[in-house]
Image (cartoon, rainbow, N blue to C red; front, side, top):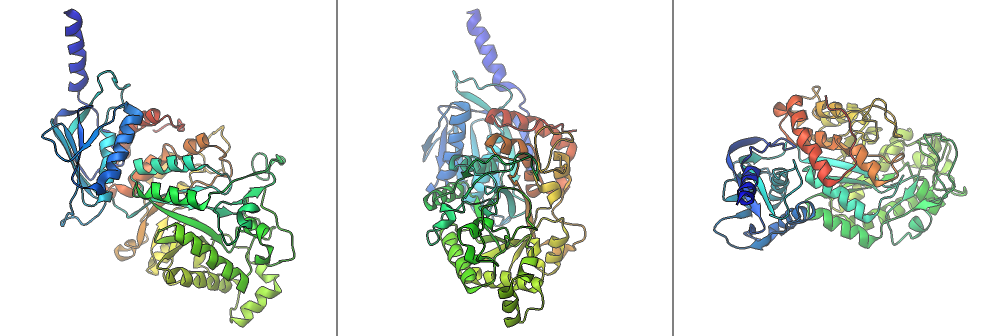
Length: 533
């Protein structure tokens, strides 16, 4: 009898405690109530339409993976249910908004669109307990009574991953996409081509993967390195794999923005098709070192063959990726290779271009016109401003905010991603025993950043679409290092692009990060143990 009473006391205390609410990013409005909703194996997910099945499956998969419980889907229930539904909200047209109401007998999640419902599921996940291991014998979990109204500040909330310097398999790309989803991110910028490897199958140009996706070695240590390992390295994604990943992301309401870098950063493409280069008789090799190669000719020549090649490549890319945005790079073009190229100089003369900056502008304009003809919009790094910005281009400002500010003043849309603090390949610790690209950008710097510069007036500020964290992988060769570099900074980024600026509070964020760290432990990710002071 005493054992029964003790068991009853333990279970009662388990579900009656005041559960701490640590939601990141911070919701627009949150009101707490008394009591808890008890989620158990008898709870059902109530669906009003099939369009929210992806949200239901994501939540169920999370429960099964981390809590050992799987809920049934149903069309009706009197109580003990989690209702997922979608209703447009005329007073708040933001499609990613949602209302979440938890009471003692049910959970009601209403998205302003199916996308909004999915974002709300991420909040519901963060209401699950993380303080201790779940009691799987009872399969019961407490969710606090709350009422939440929420929607994002910016329409573009992104993370980037470079797979050219180091290649990551399909399963890990999916895991990375899940990390974005759990942080309410909605754009995945996939850097697929560069000097060190071409990672996407293009059927019309098979040598891109036969030759361009493999390098014969990699430098050892930090650039310029202490030698070369001499190990053949590479990999690529087939078009079928690309389609699989695109669908996986779409089910999580994440848009993949593919990047095909041009006209610089093209050693891998030139190794496969040297006729693209300013010295077509040269022997090009896929780069085995890092850096931006001012001494290495990695620039495409502006010839009929080159422009046809780019159009063919982008045609296949756009068939694979439904994204409105197609990233074409445009950064770090060493124009001396155009200066030393007689064919390039003749091209400039024929097209009445006074200098190489105008040639770069011509190049970007021409590609933009082609991309626009397919109903898409180009994004480029802020160097595409040189020589005059293409009419409809979106600028990704990485060399500080100067380029983004200039573009916004010209009424062009901008994604802010300044190297400091949004390059997550920089160190999180002042004395980091892990090899990084240099620079010091701790989580505090990320959290204190605001994508809208004070130099912009109200009208110009509307051209800031949002912000993005970038992960360049020169010194990131494995999955655990990826996680070490993005966590916990991704949590700070998620709040600066989702939550209202006036609601951001470092002291409050630090408190909520205690719960987020426990979620990292639950996910078994290799986060950096950086002090959050």
